[in-house]
Image 1 (cartoon, chains in turn yellow, orange):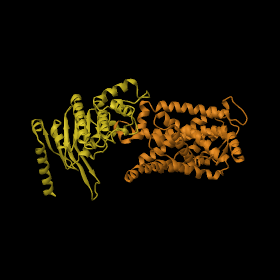
Image 2: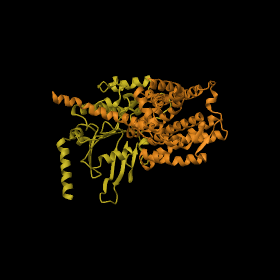
Image 3: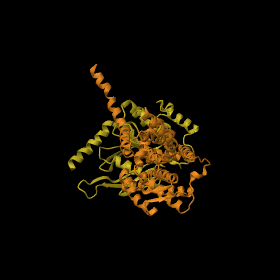
Image 4: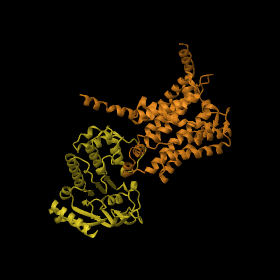
Length: 259
Length: 307
């Protein structure tokens, strides 16, 4: 379960370029719920993800994971319960390390690291099996440095790394936006398979309205640092791209009139 | 012909002495490599940590401490110095190079305070080199054996460490600190510990140097950094840096080869004052090589146009 309670964050407070990134944003995701987050640029999507991961300290408000208050915990401590796939394939992997070493780092995310040998035969076999599920041949390239992989392969690896430890919360930050349509589809299918089979509590930010329609149990629309609209259940199941864009233009018109 | 012969003979006669010296200084090269390559933290602390280790060791030897105690305390002093550099960088967001310059400048005063004077003779004190039973006039076998053994142990231990779960996490901090943090790694702890460890090795090199040469001097670190960098470049060119073992062996191999090259230059009659210029030009050339290669890489495009 993930809960955000009236999160507030203001950048450049008191200066002419003051910007309210999160304006009392509240959101609650049940365990196993897959929510898709949409919203125009500057709506607060990235700020929200950064606030959940701990990269962005809040001015006020709370973040709870499975009922525990994690608001004061730094990024590396929250990582025990939370995994994230970034938009930029370069960000989510260690480029100069091998595929297997990256898998190891992810496996150890939630555990105490010891002075025992990191890569052993048992682990390598496990990585080979998990990577083979992607069907990209990564299972035969465990010793390859990650910077020799394509963007799509790296992003697929990031995904496998993120879902590996069955995190309490999975954050997907436009994780298919930088990929070509075919690769984006492969990564998206792998995402859905993992999220559904492991019943992960997932927050996926996307600009792709078709993805928002096709995937997830609910759609959350952010605007000006708040949740403006939450579509769930029956309504979500029957929604079309046109409906979503309709909501967008209404908001945009209102914003234009207000300014 | 005569020139070549005398150069060759004087070089050969210097090989053992140079080898002993290069093994001792290989710890400094290691102390430069660890932050630079595994933590992505270009660090200048070694210029101050090397004499720090020397001064601490010198004072302890002069006061009658055992040579091992002197080395261990020097190691700890170096560790603290390295931790300070990393902390200055992390806490105050000061560039790593500037943090290193600050630290080495402050260490100069600290080193003077430790010794109370700029130069201290410890000639006649027991050293770790006295324990190896190979005494032969004119041939520093004991130094080669002792320093070589320590180097071998350090190389093996570090290779094992950097492939453990903890060591892999430290390398991840250098490879991508943001990703490391997202994987639950405490970037601060890894950086401070890693840079501290590196400076500890540098200080150990200083302590061994003092026991080898019989005196400590506050200026003994002058130019050690550029020598170390040159040695590292050579080592990486020879053994590469693709695996943990290769990356860790590079400082040792590089140090041995580099100081022999210096010895050749000196034997050939190069005036010692010119050595730093030559070393600097060499490091510059090694660092510039990748960008020169890249511009050569554009050649096929021109050929394609010609076709």
